Length: 127
Image 1 (spheres, rainbow, N blue to C red):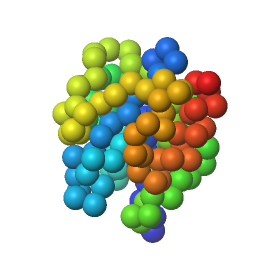
Image 2 (spheres, helix red, strand yellow):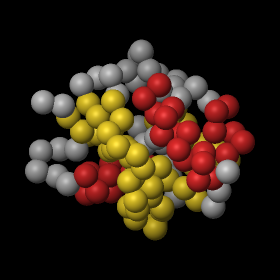
Image 3 (tube, rainbow, N blue to C red):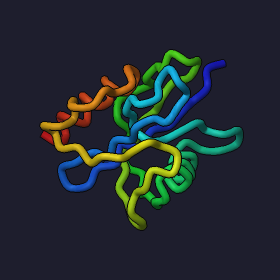
């Protein structure tokens, strides 16, 4: 069975929040849309809210889903939702760094390959 990870395309104004991976070693330093695994018995939106609290220290409102199931290459599919911060300021609790990227800056960072198609869809919304 394929597992599910959820991602939060957190948009503020015309900028997308990007998070730099701390590990594992094969992806450390690459950038991603924040999120994580859906735990057994947990809904996707609930998992996304929990992951944003754990990884970024923020509470988010979950919006519409972007695209379909995005394969991650690690036995999981990623489901990405637009999100907005309703409380807190994001801090990199589990990441090396965070950056707010404008449409013109979206491809200035080396994204995880699984996130690139999602970032392209977000680009269309920011541009």
